[in-house]
Image (cartoon, rainbow, N blue to C red; front, top):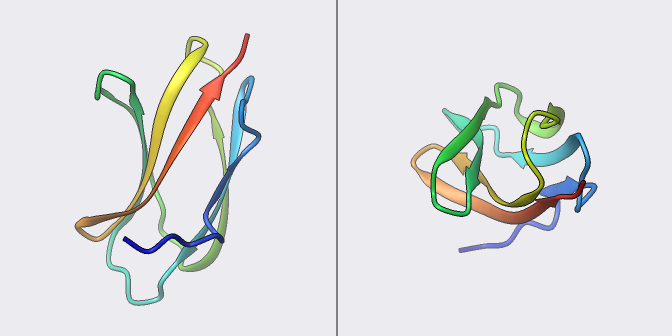
Length: 88
């Protein structure tokens, strides 16, 4: 799996919002940013319709403090994973 340093989630840890900076290949058919709890439950799914360098703000203020797994999925494969945490 190739790591793309252009894909970032910040701030980390976060308090209410995260900013996604993603690089989505022009040929990508479907791109989705998924957020999972540590027990594997899908908590949030954010479709990414733009291609190229993309920036999204995601409101996560409703989530309790803790550790989360964020994944960027382009077409069928997971292209990047991030561990992020929410502080009080």
